Image 1: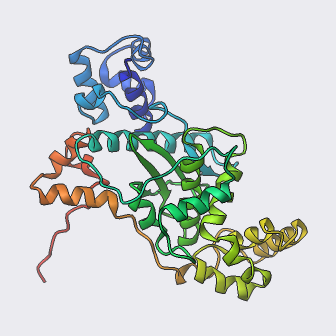
Image 2: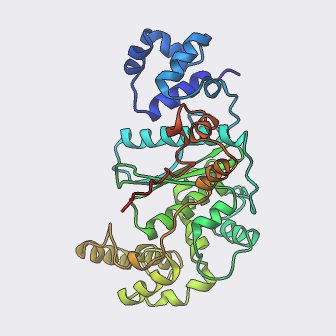
Image 3: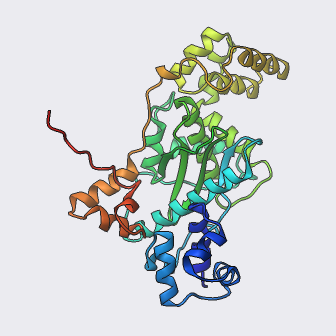
Length: 347
């Protein structure tokens, strides 16, 4: 099955190019490009070279038989606010699909030996809370708060990447790249929101990689709540929902006061009326978007993706070569798989 057109479409969208923009660079009509993108016409070798140069990818990347879970230009599981602009989330979705293609292209040549696996459960047969408990058990996680959630996801072969989304209305998104999931997180979020988003996206990967449900967002939140705050451990401490107590629990469990209060509601320790009053108070104090106490949480930074590039560098590969392994042209394509080299300055 030809899919070159899907690759062209995804890369173009990830770069923020319109069809007119690309047509001008290629010297072709919009109708011709449209036939390429819809797999109605296969570009010849000369045109593939032009496309690769215009899009910053190699010809082998354009022709690669990607075996991705879902379509190449698949809709992403994305944690976003209802008021976010369609152009913003479509742009992030294309960038996520581009990253998972680059990851799949690289991982076809470099393998990851993951300590754990990401299981899959049918949300009809398995409640999100039960799935969360089973994942914790399968990963042999210690009882209590999850320390360094990012490392636990990476130990399961999940490629966690952070970037500036250019908006605070999108928290994160996820999709699969071959056998490895990719989770893209908004680096501008405070630690508590990033941790919740990671658990939320993990819920999507566990519950919705093969199964689609109309309540997917609620299910992912229910999974995240139990995964980060198991009922049998959090229920007793949450009986006290005063601000000082919530701040203490935030530091202990690494989640926001809002997540803690919503967990109390889910466990029937607080009513919907209590919830309304709580969020009114949070708004009045200006804490709805930026809560106090986030600076007391240990920062979590992804390491797996960059470590792949580090190993390739140690094996003697240049950044240009690493970029080629991701399907890109030049050393800029090595990112985010390698950190930029730092230059020492004489003082």
